[in-house]
Image (cartoon, rainbow, N blue to C red; front, side):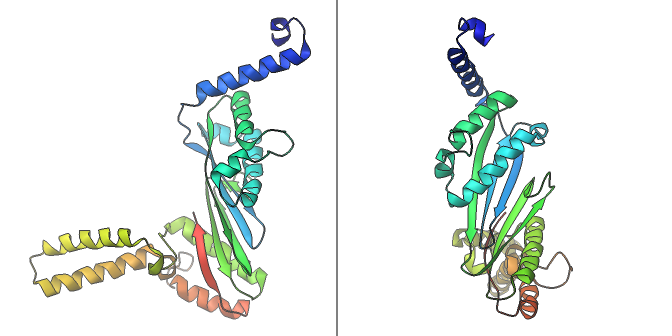
Length: 260
């Protein structure tokens, strides 16, 4: 068809096909892409996590789409998680940018796709633990977590702890590592809601104040990683699990941050 349209001119036919592809991609750009894959690329002290969306789960199982997500994950480490920088980086082996490669994939696969978000965690000395849930292939699935562990101790033991913590985070979705890291605006909002709830009890002001503080403490226990109950044993606090692991690792361990 392309050769017919261009009178048999091979170069013009290639341009015709590319133009058609871009036009098709533009038509699909407004369609909702809520499925897709999370890709994790880990280099030990540095790891990246990316989310690339597609319209259907069927495309998430497409090998070309998976290849694109895997390559974008590796590039995200170089981009330091900057999504705009990542979109303009050269895509390996194609001569196109990442965003142009996605446009090309849209034309070939026939669904809208977009590069939604990316993040990088780096530690000076230690490991970045990773876990991918509902894995479709290594380092790729429906839900991903990376978590930074800083320590001078044994890296293999540290990596084991990192994976367990990442699995925990995937399950519990904490807001932050510790109470100090939670956005003060979030805490203020929760405190305000607790205060309104406590006032409705009709109890004296000093009792209401104690009720509010008790609920804030419970909020921190439920919402911050180190204060949560470790899902793998169902009884220890995460901070105690980290402390206990220091013996196996042979050095202090600091959880520097995570991305889910």
